[in-house]
Structure formats: structure tokens, C-alpha cells
Length: 502
Ligand code: 4AD
Ligand code: MG
Image (tube, rainbow, N blue to C red; front, top):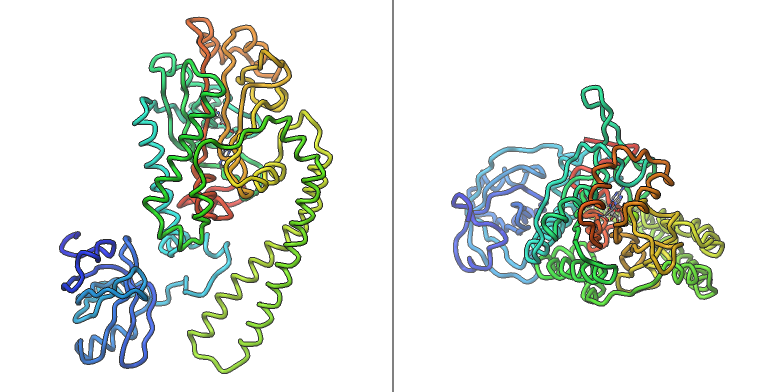
């Protein structure tokens, strides 16, 4: 109950009772004698049934003309109805219109993504964005809960930074009173310093990368959580990461089942996300990429996509034929919406068909020593039904701070965690180089000036210990869990290389 209004999420305790809902008109239809108003109030959707004669005629007429997203309160009796959205409906006896909305630009018909991003301030009200926002909320809550309950101390690391944390190529430079500084790419280096005080720490905040790529996996501003632990080795990190990710998924399954269903997420696959995850070394991953098994796997995938393309084309042709018949307005809208969906699926299938041979070639010709590319990660992750750790990457392909494996100096003690079913990397992490001389050499080898790193090097002078950590990207995790294809849908106001809409 808020301010005397009953929230839709609490309707189960109002069965048979009178209640007043306050919200917005999500959708409506009328048969002349009876109207069905779908109201959303931020906690869910509820169908309100307005019968002629049960409310004053004047009100009935007003409601019939009410535009989508008008705000109103509706009073009536709550009854259970399995067919109704949310499982309950309201038999209206009264309503009050708070504010009229006319010509709401986002209709129940689908729109293109550019249009929706330009109208993000309104599109956030859509069912899909609402469901994703709810899942994201749970993911963030689970992140904090996991670390808080496992002896980690939160350390807020700075956003203006004096040193390059990850990659020189993706820095956002800021003019800080005449001195160039960078927006943070990672809190890790600062966190390492805090780990030497608190033992187990984490930071959680916005992260900036001038990614010059327009892929579905990259934002220029995203949220990353990073734990850092003193006295931990690679096995310890993998265990921490798999427990952490399993906890997040379990929390979402517990709190957001209905949103996952609405989004069409693969709930059965999420239920499998429990430790232990698969573990591959980079070298094993390369063997997989270049194996005949992968070649066959990709050929099969191509065949499947071609079949899918045919099915989509025939469905589209069928609907286009239906469009020419005598139809009611709601049928016209429904077909138009389905067509937009199908055409966007078709475009996506076409892209996949086009990319398949390119990705197959990249995989087949993969040379040991390179970093895994997006398509390589996708292939490995498609071949697994649970998240996969890939460990021990070549030193040259990875950041300067990663500890060299003393058993094999060519590789580092690091890992990426790939989400299954083609989603790719959601975590990157490593044991940190804790030897002063080796770290200094790595900084120099990567062409970095050691001077600004002097404080970071100090940590190796005063009681250096084995330590490590990782970073998990929130948007990629939400995209994977919800089955959303593009991470721009997993943050309320996305920032991308070429586009900032609002
Ligand atoms: O693998 P990354 O670059 O690792 C680090 O930044 C380490 N310093 C973390 C650590 O060890 N403390 O980034 C970690 C994760 C990626 O796996 C990905 O989920 C996310 O951050 N990420 C991005 N998400 C969205 N857009 C981008 N441009 C991203 N770049 C990285
Ligand atoms: Mg990475």
C-alpha cells in the first residue's frame, strides 16, 4: 500500500476486497459495452474491467477515449483470474483521470531500435525494459549481498585516475585543471592497495572505456564490480568467481521468475548454473577452435540458420498475405508488430549466416599467442551449457599486472569467464604480479612510463603477498541472464561509441 493505493504486486492479499490502483494506462480495448484497461503501476500490470452501467456513463465514455500512458486511479473489487495478466483483475466501480496523454509516441506496435533509443525516457515504461530493469536490480543487490556476507569491505575507488589501468587505446582523457587525467577503466590498482589493508575488498561503480567498436558487447560507460583478495591463488579465484556467479543467478531465479518468463529467458539453462563450472586452459581453447569438431559444429550451425531463415521468410510471407484482408484495427496492429519482430529476426539470421564462414575461418586459423576474439569466445561458449573458465593466456595478449606463471613463463595466471550459449566474456581476472622487479619490467615492456606507477610498485616493496581478483560487467551479466541480445538494453541510459541519444 502506498498513500492509500494498493500496489499491483500485492493484489493477492486483496482477493474479494475493494482496492484502488494508481498508475498509467498501458493498453486498452473496448467492445462498446465492456472495456479492458491494462494498468501498470511500476510493480506490475493489472487488467481492469469496466462494464457499462457499473460506472457513470460519462466516465465510461472518458475512459473509452483515454490515450495510452494517461495517468489515473481505478477503484473496484479484486478477483483472481488465471487468464489475466498477473493472475488478478479489478472489476471497476470508479476511476479518476489524473493526467491525459494524447498521441503517446510508442504504440503497442513495434518500433525500430533507433526510434526506441531516442525515446528511451518513455521506452523505459515498456514491459521489456521494465523486466530487464527488475532483473538488473536483483543482480546488483545480489552482488553487494554476496561480498558483504563473505567478509569483503567496500572500497570506493576514484573515477579520475592518474594511471592507465587496462588499455592505453581505450582511455577517456579529461583536462583536470590543466593536467591530463583519465576516467577510470578499472578500480583494480587502487583496490590492490586497499587489499593490503583489509584483506578482502571490492569496488563497484561506473567504468569508462573509449571502445572504438560498435558491437553488442561494448558500452563506453558500464558498471563493473571488482573483488580483490590477499593471499589467494588462481584456483581460489576460480572458486570465488563460480560461487559468486551462481549466487547471482540463483537470486534472479528466486526473485524474478515472472520477468524471466516474460523476457523469454532460458530458465532451464539458468537452473544449471551451479559450481563447478567448466575449466579450460587457453591452450585447450585454441585446440578446440582449430579442431575438426568445431568446423563441423559451425557447419551444422550454418545449416540450422539457413533452415531458420526459410521458416522466417515463409512466416513473413504468410502475414503479409493476411495484411491484405479485411481486418479490425487491433488485428492490423498485431500483425504489424509481429512483422517488425520477424523482420528483425530475419536480419539477425542473415548477419549470422554472413558471419559464420568468417568466424569459422578465424577459428580454424587461430594462432597460439593472440587474445581470443569476440567470435572465438562465442564459439567456445556456444559449445558449453554452463559458464566456462579459460585460464593461462599468453603473456603478450594480456595486461601488465598479471602474474607470470612460474611453471610456464609464456603464460599468465589469469582467467576469463565465458557465459554459455554464445554470450561470451562476463568476467576477466588474474593473480597479480607481486614481484617488484618483474612488475617493473612488465610496465616497461608494455611501453608505459613507470613513474606514475611508483605507488603501485610500492605495494611490492612493503609486505608483498600473493593476491588477485577479477571484474564482472553488470550489463553483460544482465544480458546473458535475460537472454537480451544487446547490452545497450541492459542499462537505463546507454552510452555507445557512436551514439548517445538522451
Ligand atoms: O576484462 P576486463 O577488462 O578486466 C578488468 O578491467 C580487470 N581490471 C578486472 C579485475 O581484475 N579487477 O573487464 C572486466 C569485465 C569484462 O569481463 C566485461 O564483463 C566488462 O568488464 N567489460 C565491459 N562491459 C561493457 N562494455 C565494455 N566496453 C566492457 N569492457 C569490459
Ligand atoms: Mg577482459
